[in-house]
Image (cartoon, rainbow, N blue to C red; front, top):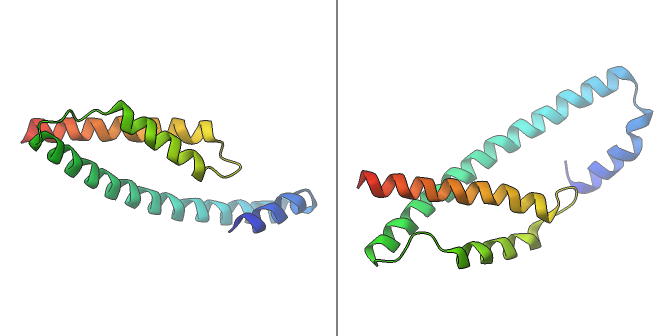
Length: 112
């Protein structure tokens, strides 16, 4: 479902009866489940790269935590926020992603 379909659906939502809304709910959940699968795969791939970045930084005697880099990421991702997701919400999501990336890097450093 693209943004255009979503906007049409929002306009027509009130015209749906109970059965149609139930069918819609099932279809929307299928879409969300597929997106969750894709997101999990992308997050795993991102985490792999984060581990490798941590290893490179350690080999170069650089600190793994870089507040400047995280500010750059936050600034860049603001450009990707699309309604209904706000920039602030996207930043909060990325705060968690970056926190977990640092934790994985730390665990990797302790394991090696």
